[in-house]
Amino acid sequence: MNAEELVEVVLPGKVEPDGLQLRHGTVPTPGAGQVVIRMEATGISFAEQQMRRGRYYDQPPFPFVPGYDLVGTVLAAGPGVEPGLTGARVAALVKVGGWASHVLVDAADVVLVPAGVGAAEAETLVVNGITAWQMLHRKARVRAGQTVLVHGANGGVGSVLVQLARAAGAQVIGTASARHHDALREKGVEPVDYRTDDIPARVRALAPGGVDAVFDHVGGPGIVDSWRLLAPGGTLVSYGSASTRDDQGSGQLPVLKLLGRVWLWNALPNRRHACFFNVWAGRALSRDRFRARLRADLTQVFTALQRGEVTAQIAAQLPLARVADALRLAESGTVAGKVVLNP
Image (cartoon, rainbow, N blue to C red; front, side, top):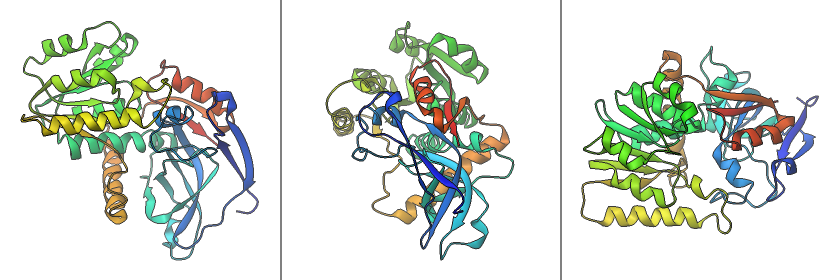
């Protein structure tokens, strides 16, 4: 392990993609209960796009190493770690730190990647798959025969969410720009053009009685339309504020506004429900429960991949040294799926 070199991407402050820095160092040594993962694939999620603008609601202070998740091989394990873990391919959800050649994590936080699943394939389904699965099955509890609306159906989370919803037997309406509509139809999704269509009118035409669940990462004023489109007994799952990505000012305020709306809607006498989804919710109260749930749910997502219910949507793969190009591509809005970084 000592012969290898650590290479990581540093976000020094609010910078353009070209302002990201490469830093070289020594591969960390695992302590008790820890492992060092040699990264094979990490990725660019919407969180990093917000972080470089200083607008992710609980990002650490600059400078730091971004990277919400990763897949790789366990290079070394510290005392107390199961010996068989060394050499295994694993996935980890870390929030920050994944954009590095080697990442130190607690062994209890890794999830085994099934044999035959490639690193880049698995990477597209870590934070995106966990988010989609838990929103669909733990929050909205979508059942066969129901109808759901997925905003950003071609995106990282959205593309997984629509496939899991179809696998659960739901009818899916998905918003996306026109160039993604054919691909969505192939997945059994009814597409709506968010740029040219009157979304509420179009959705009401497709689901006159309302939809049973809406998954909204956009936030902003449009969240009101999402709420109004719910059928009685329906659930709105808000999980981001993409519409405010390029705004100035506080990164916390858009989320606080969403939380306020959710609280108000749930306080009203109605038969609908709203929630704000945070993949890290509950971790502070019970880390063991959080880990067990994450492991169980990600394993379900990988199983769905193996069954062909979900396909890994890789938008592009670029080396870590070209992270600026990769970030620009991810932010361009021109690709479907996830931009993956390799060592």
